[in-house]
Image 1 (cartoon, helix red, strand yellow):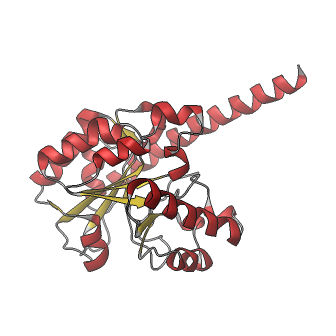
Image 2 (cartoon, one colour; image 1 turned 60 degrees about the horizontal axis):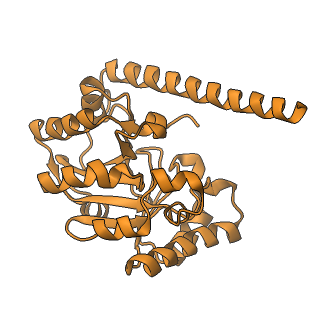
Length: 268
């Protein structure tokens, strides 16, 4: 009974922490959107980091279907052109260029995102957590795309990259554990999908989640493009991405495109 009570308390504490984090996030983003810019506009392309669309299980990472489509329309109305993430990663891109990336391979990537991308002719990148796509845990069978579903998505303007085996905080791993996450995910994707991924998205992707030793391990594993989930605070040598949240209405999304959150990092 005592152990059960402790577990209940810990679960409740986790829920409260998520609620506090979400409340803090929405307040921060609303506040930052209202502050006039004091820095020069970004002169290179911007890569947006999404996670899911109309899949509420992902919490603050989930964008509604209607909002996602409105964001794409809004970007086009503001004069942005959608290009591949690799184009911006390798060339810097132009100030009016945007790219779409999606992390984790939630089922909404196939159900909602892929049809929208195909219909609009927009290239995009999907980062796969290989251990999740193996469906060894029961929750993943409902929420994460398996290998057959991922294989069905391949082709066209979709690039597939690695997002590790288990989605850990790499800063908390030993070098041996990090090497395993990097190499095993690469090899599993190659085995199941027939492609060797050259791109890697850092789980969580904030400044505290990566360092020089990890960066070299990723390069040694064959990843030539390593994506963060931050802009000006991202680790040097990584490709910057701008995190899109469920709270990003038209006002906040326009501020996001204008760089209001380039120094902002998610509170974890």
